[in-house]
Amino acid sequence: MTLIANHPPTAELQALDAAHHMHPFTHNDELAEKGARVITRARGVTLTDSDGNEYLDAMAGLWCVNIGYGRDEIAEVAARQMRELPYYNTFFQTSHVPGIALAAKLAELAPGDLNHVFFAGSGSEANDTNIRLVRTYWAQKGQPEKNIIISRKNAYHGSSMGSASLGGMTPMHEQGGLPIPDVHHIDQPHWWDEGGEMSREEFGLERARQLEKAIQELGPDRVAAFIGEPVQGAGGVVIPPDSYWPEIQRICDEYGILLIADEVICGFGRTGKWFGSQTYGIRPHIMTLAKGLSSGYAPIGASVVCEEVAAVIDACEFNHGYTYSGHPVTAAVALENLRILEEENIVDRVAEHAAPYLGEKWAGLADHPLVGEARTIGMMGTIALTPDASARAKFAGNAGDVGLICRENCFQNGLVMRHVGDRMIISPPLVITDAEIDTLVERAWTALDLTH
Ligand code: PLP
Image (cartoon, rainbow, N blue to C red; front, side, top):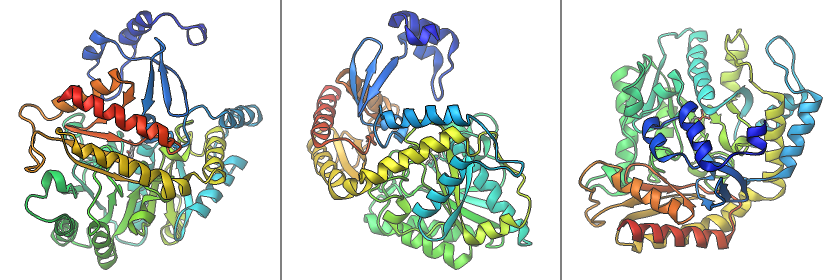
């Protein structure tokens, strides 16, 4: 407690961090040499580090702080709930008010007949739940062999054994015995990197039809579900061609395949509607939620399930759950976050103003000599770094070297952007102001100049 309340100087914190803290997705020895940036506070869209430096956080943490940092209402709700009922489970025929209220609220917000909610502690856990949900669904319907889940290369669905198997990140599959059996990956709709001579829309159709081909090869009686992020986030903000999702939907409908929309990033206003499925006209049987559900103020995940799937699952004992499924404090925090999103019209403001404004400013980065495409959808953006935009060329050397330099140059200029290979991506808090968007794009331009 003393260390937190009254922390020592940065060098001492970095030494303790290096000695004891294993960071996720990090080469920890390399980090120990230079020392981690220690973030000590945040307000709105601004982070402050232990030396007092400020950064505009264009990533909303990890795509999650949709309402911005430092909302006292959330802290107050969490404190109140901790005093009232800090924990109780929902396993053994008990329930509690925040869990009931949040499930009902999500049923109201979710599109179509997605009316049933299974809570988890994270997006990874929710996707593990989804694997078991869809396989149990088909087994209950007398088709246990219908258990293959089709996903996409370069997708990210989490880090647990199941969710990372759904994901299509090869560096993850090279470690720890992934993927689990009966997961199949098709190519992603990444036109800039993989579209060749095809138009965006032709390419979108071609990539969607890989799903049909895979179903035919594997056998429709073997394929349980297809899972996809409406926009692949961690893969580099891969904004699909408009032709892509309608064709995926047609194929799932035609072959009787369950469709899981992983809305962990796209949910809660990120693409300009409450859910990415609404932006792309997807009608999922199950949605995966996390991140923006609590704006990252507390860890939570959820599977939101349609009437038909829920009816089959509810007719058996589904032997699955987490100690923190529907945690009362987290649920109360998520409800307060949803109240803020609704009462402050944050999603409408994104659609009507913030997203078009960001889109226009971000598009200007395409004029930089280091930039190929510059795209946004809602409040997500991506730029491809390239030595030759017209040829959609790649840099020589390791993919990601230039992106890494650019990310560091962003930090030096008070901006947090993430790199995925040689691509820079953003996903700022939805409450970012016009002036802050201007600052974001100016700093990005400066970082590109320094990288050039
Ligand atoms: N699904 C998607 C689309 C994600 O982007 C992530 C995390 O970035 C996850 C699932 C996993 O969520 P978590 O990190 O909460 O386990």
